[in-house]
Figure (cartoon, rainbow, N blue to C red):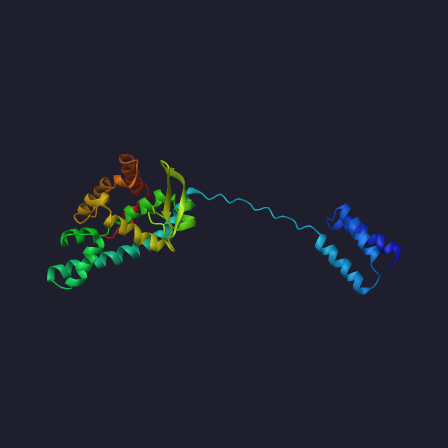
Length: 255
């Protein structure tokens, strides 16, 4: 390589490749130590490519409107909740029929044990799913329209706590007194919906709610019995009702 060609190459490096002046000096020093040949030229060119800085791409933040969040929530969760509700409703009707006909007694006893029900009446109260509108309203509140950290990291839509160390879970940022709080981690949203219904079916705090939901499918008659779901109590019930009414979630209820 002739001297003027070499100088031209160095100038090109400095002006057009983004190499710093000190980088060019290093390349020049390395280049002069090598013999001028095809292989050596290729090595030098390789160094040039490696030294060239990679431009960082600026990622634009996309602002998602509340309307878009709500639509996404509805598109994702309504089909899932509807499917789970229909499965649970069929199970309830089958067990109710078996009880009336005195059939499948062993299976019924097994369900009683699972749901901690000491009578057929209590079992039916546990198995009866409540309206889809309530599930959607609670999901929207607890998951912030599927955008909360617990939802995006753990598929936990309903803020269900974890009390067992051996189950999948994530730690909450806050504490209750000096104790750490953990929330369950689910594989899918569908699994979260199933567990939410089971939690309502078994937890002692919702005894009155279960008794009422076998009597009516009117969500506004049922929400007053869900005050224990939140520390906000009456304010939470009011929020639930407003959520159902404003978003017309009751249009998804199966009559």
